Image 1 (cartoon, rainbow, N blue to C red):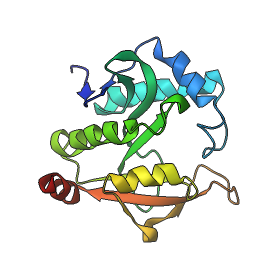
Image 2: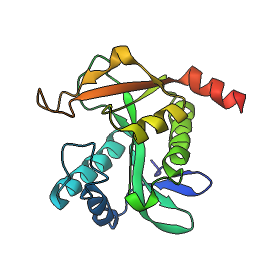
Image 3: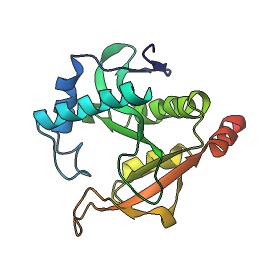
Image 4: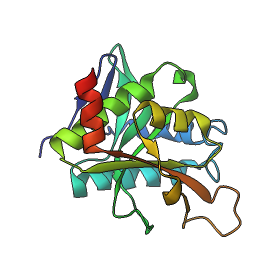
Amino acid sequence: MDPIVLHSARLRLRPWHDSDPASFAEMNGDPEVMRHFPACLSTAESDALAQRVRAHFAEHGFGAWVLERHDQPGLIGVLGLLRVGFEAPFTPAVEITYRLHRAFWRQGYVLEAAQAALAFAFERLQLDEVVAFTVPANLPSRSVMQRLGMRHDSAGDFEHPRLPVGHPLRPHVLYRLARQQWQERIDER
C-alpha cells in the first residue's frame, strides 16, 4: 500500500520519517504542550509512542500523520485518526487526535489539518463517526472540536481507564461527529 499523504492549503500530513522522533520527543517533553496529560514523556517514552503510531499505520492503513508546513518541511506536530485503544461505552471507535509544538499554536494549523483528516475519514475510509476526547479543562482542544462541528456528548463523558481512580485527569469529555453531520457542513459551504 502506498503511503497516504494529505494536503491542505498550508500543510502536508505525511508518514513518519526516521528523523521525526527527535522533534516529536522535544514536543512531548514540553510541560506546556503536555499540561493536560499525566506527565511529560521521556525520550524513550516518546520514541515508543512514535513506534506505536507507525505500527498503527501498518496495521490499519491510517494513523497519526506528521504535520509539516509546505514552505518549511519538518515536524511541527502530529494529527490523525487512531482506533481507540481502550474499552469504553463508546468503543470501538476512531478518534481524531492532535498535538502541536508550542511555537505553532494559535495559527489555525490544527483546524486546517483536522479538516483534511476528517475528509479522509468520511470520504476514503467511509467511517460513520469520528470521536474526540480530552480533559474538561483543555479549552483550546475543546474549541477545535467545536469548530470542526463535533458535538459534546455529555452522556458519553467518561473516566479514562488508563488513569488511576482519583487522578485529576481521569474525567474526560467526549465529542462526536457523524458522517452525515460532516457532510451537511460541507454542503453548507
